[in-house]
Image (cartoon, rainbow, N blue to C red; front, side, top):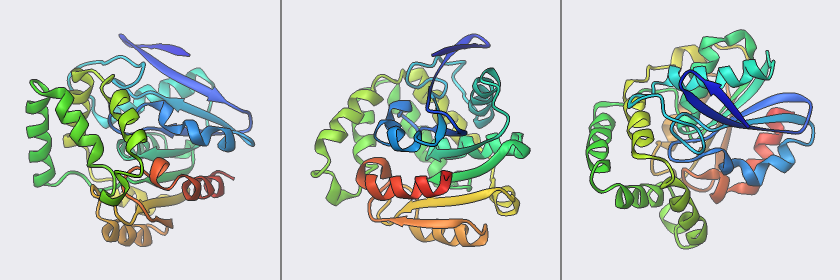
Length: 257
C-alpha cells in the first residue's frame, strides 16, 4: 500500500491481526527482508512493514534523510493506520530509526528490539568511510553496492549464502543513488541515543551476531547489559535474518509475545 507523505510516496504493508509490531529494515534493504519471518510473527500480531525513504518502493525527499526524516515517515504510516501503541524491531539503520521513533513518542512504545544495531553515533573513522562511499557512489555505484553487501556477512558464510547474497545485491541496486546518499548523510548526523535507551522503561531486546563485521559484538553486549536489555547472541554476522534465521525467529517471537 502507498501513503502520500509530503512530496513522497511511502510504501507499507500490513499482515495479521492483534497487537501491532513495526518492522524497520536496514540500509540498502527494503521491507521484503522480513519475508521469511512474517508468517510466524503475524500469527498473533498485526505486523507492519515500511519501506524507508529512498528504499524499496518509497520515494526520496532529498539528498539528506535524517533519522527524524525516516522516523516521521514511519510515524505517518502508523497515524494513517490509527496505531497508537506498538512494539518495534529495527535492523541496522532500522534500529537507528526505531530509536528516534521511540524518542519522538516514548509513550507509544511497548517494546524496542535493536537487531544488529547500536545506540552509538558514528565515530570519526566511520564518518570518513561514509564520505568516501558517497563519493564513490556517484561514479561506481554497482561495484560499491556489490562489495558493501558481501561485507555484511561473516566471511565463512559468504559461500554458504551465495544465492541469498546475489539476491540481496539485486534488491540493493534498486535503491537509487539519491536514496543511498540520503541515508549515508543521515547516518553521519545521527545522535547518541545510549542514555535514552538505558533509561527507557519499555521492553528492550538487543540481538547481535558474534561474527558481525560491522558492529563490535562485545561492545553491543556490554551496552545491552547497561541498558537492562534482554541480550540474544547469534552465531553469524550482520545479516541475522539470513545467517541465523531460525534462532532469530525464536528471539523475535519471544520479544513480541
